[in-house]
Length: 114
Image 1: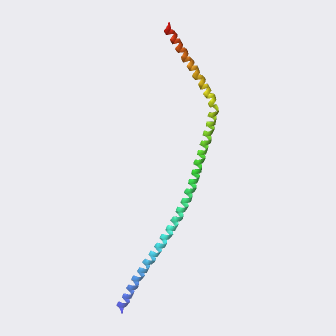
Image 2 (image 1 turned 180 degrees about the horizontal axis):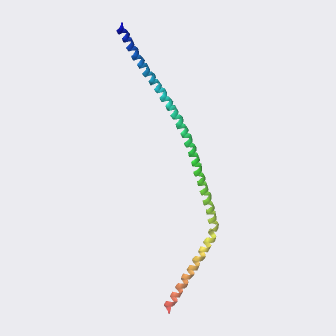
Image 3 (image 1 turned 180 degrees about the vertical axis):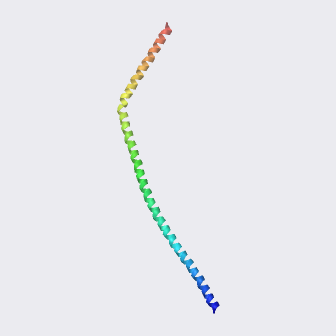
């Protein structure tokens, strides 16, 4: 009878060990699921932060571009206002230079004749 009792004890011991292993496996699966769910939440939160940062960064970049456009528009308008005056001044200088060149050429031509 001792062998039967010992045999039952061994069977119960192996079954209990198996039960504990299965319970640990089940608990590990549940832990893995919770870990994945936590990671999903963390990534979603990180995405929201990145989206907000990106939106703010983009808004900042667009504002800088708008400021550049406004500045260039002012500069262009200012240049356009002074364009005619500067063009007239340049034309006047060109005429004076042409006169000086013709004067030198005529002096050179007269000195060759003599």
